[in-house]
Amino acid sequence: MPPPSVINSDGFPSAPSKTYWTVVFTNQPSQILVLFSNLVCSTPRVCLASYFKSDSIAQIAGVLFFLTTNQCFSSITAVELFVVEKKLFMHEYISGYYRVSSYFFGKLVSDLLPMRMLPSVIFTCITYFLLGLKPTVEAFFIMMFSLIMVAYAASSMALAIAAGQSVVSIATLLMTISFVFMMIFSGLLVNLRTVVPWLSWLQYLSIPRYGYAALQHNEFLGLDFCPGLNVTANSTCNFATCTGEEFLVNQGIDLSPWGLWKNHVALACMIVIFLTIAYLKLLFLKKFT
Image (tube, rainbow, N blue to C red):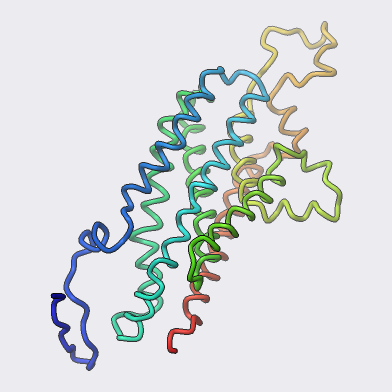
């Protein structure tokens, strides 16, 4: 039998005393399973990609694009955070256990933040050296920070779509469709400089585009793909891309430091906007029937 409720000083029945870890491992879907499933499903594909040494523009660009899209699609599992517990949340809110803000920020601190940051950190530590990317400490941590920001932005978007939904499959379908359209305007499949003006504004709504641009700026800046070639004596470089800077300029990416950090600022703004939408949807959710 469940433990009896105790009437508190406000006249509301108090929740049964359970520790946080008891709730995590008994009443919620296993967060550890989600963590390891993301790593197990992602790492073998990156290991296969690392079989081909990343020493050309096409290979490096493809690897960075995969890392970005992998973070986005791995964050789709965040839709279950509010959908699965919708009825429980409504029951406990009506019973006076907590406010909407307490529930929302508690979920962010205890579930969303660690379960999106920890896989990104482990994923970066495993894949960065397998792929043979730029061997500098600064580049390593910038890549890790960029992937974490992409994961947070994608998860925040998942929460904004899933808040108030009753079926997980509908929220998952909406997230998948959104990410497929975002991938088109990320910068690899289509050169964003060639997109017609009446569609080019869609690139600013693409989460993968900001993550992909940050990873490209971090990796390609300072690379030389034609070592030992005398540019003045050989006219080949008039038709080929021999430096990372030339590739970045061709992609329309600013070479200044702001060209890197503006992508993180944009992702941070999207995180705030999506979390605000998710909170407002929970706040104005019809809790009384």
